[in-house]
Length: 250
Image (cartoon, rainbow, N blue to C red; front, side, top):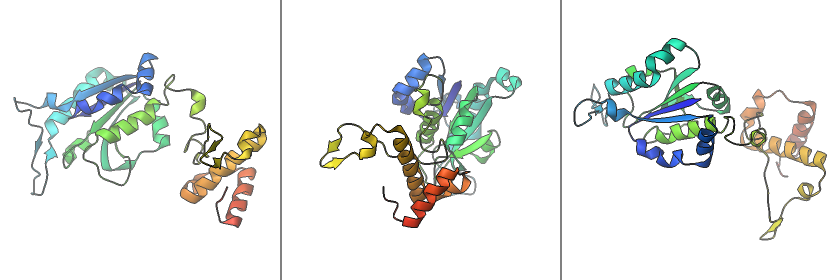
């Protein structure tokens, strides 16, 4: 797939382009990653890209013309005519919160275009020229660059060859639950030992412990996720036990 990121600050993505998962996806030809400088579409030697808001108020607003021209250039006539598989998403605090389901949806596209706002944001007329408005949470950042990296990272790691497929199957949100705790060497660290069940070699006991811990952690931290999940009989049994103790302890 191709991901295009439209930004006023392309230098912010230098390190991102050199992260192992991104480089591996590019090397495996699963990904083409394009960073587009919106300033190149602003007229004049000063590359005037923002202006004060109509009606007054603090801050500056990104102007329509440079952003709209950048979007048109990136989309291209051929892609617009081809139809399907192309989504343009603007990063904005007012957007729908991005989640793992959206990451999977975007990973199935042939072209994802991410638009980064800055200053007080984008002229409202730009939002009528994009397909989606997305947010990474209920907080405000200086610009859309870091949120765009977060979205791109979540999408790229799902592409073939970016990471091992088996590494993603039991992660948080993949099956509607938070992931169970993980441990590695040493078996004892500063007097705290890894649980015996994980050292037992009994795969069935380990599987059930991991399921219980996923349910425990989700019940404790994100009970809203359980409301959306269709439970197996085993999961219902474990949840009943957890709720009965109400301590959420391992």
